[in-house]
Image (cartoon, rainbow, N blue to C red; front, side, top):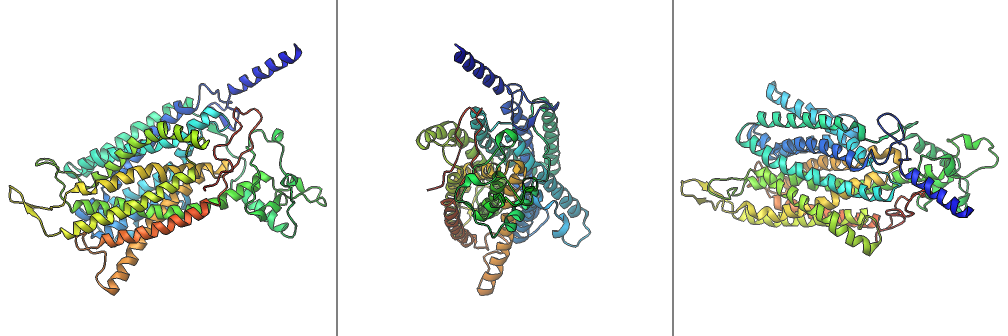
Length: 557
């Protein structure tokens, strides 16, 4: 009878605990959040809404920017492509470098138009750089990692974030681009400003529902520095064969911070957690002794560097897909009827539409099926998902090269329509396959990279993790301009340059084949890293509903 009463009492306490979110979150009044009243989708939907409007502004301007630079500002193909990629690079590197000099690439002229244009363009880059990493991590923070159902819902959050971004891409590259091309760029920008203002109001309406992470007591980079210094100080010591002998703070003394399990990678850093008996005050000095969790968090940062390097080439492919693909489509037959012509940048909307269709199928059908087979909560692990996306990138560039080869063969073979005008014989419809593959690929590599850089960094550095994701893509944008310049210089020295003033005089097909080769090398490097990768492993608390980790010690076979 007594034992039954104890069991009932324990269940009652456990049930009471589940009513509250007992991590390091508070509600808008600074109290422990009530699970039913805060967080999850009721809060993250507001974040998704404001993220969508920011992406509409970004895609609405960025997708058609190369058309504006070539037609309105009369820049040649190489200059316009580089300027677009400089801007895109700035929007994704700003979260790390803190700023970017927007007028560095403006010609030395006194035209007010150019100055105001670039000032506005890089103001958007500055806002995007501050907004995106924080908004994504804030949205994901609305889900409790230590609650089974909320943890699964958070995995879906990244899928639906991609869905929202794809809807923004679809709207930005159709309605907004149409207004830009056939009404006015000024009207289009005004519409974007109004949409952004309305969603900011909606975002503030969600304040009562948000869960807020408590302000960290220290700089997130400080523990990493302390671990490195402690490890160097103990460089002559030998690591114990039993990891249990390494120093760790008991869970009872660390109720809010999640503890990480020991891993065998970067064994040198384990020396920072060796307890030296001769130093009686060592446990109070973080510069001499670090916990296993601190050591593992340092390992996490080192672990993401190779994956970050592979994301840079993804940025190159994305850059060419949103610039050269658009110019390529502009040189084709854009008419789908006698009265309707597709704006070149609107082809990007096809990729957004495909992603929108594929994400719900992936999240609601594919993941549950694969989850039963693999036993992984995500269905497909993060690195497998990224690897599939990298493979699709290779296919995209190969298809683009084949289409461009065919298009170049048909240049000069225009047909005369009934009204006496000439038009290209090759239809824009030939580009549909590559944009369909891009749409499916977005659901794999971009979503996978976002989730990876959120999950596989220390809990206190998740906004920085999202900045790392963005900066990797941003480096790719800058590298795409550098690669374009190198290709132009080298091919011009040995013969006719692949990059001319327009696409009909260029050999973009050869550039795309070069990208196929680089992406294959990138995939091999990624597989080499992934097969040796160890995921972050969290020590589950006794009160947690489920005792498993989403990826645990899984490695990519």
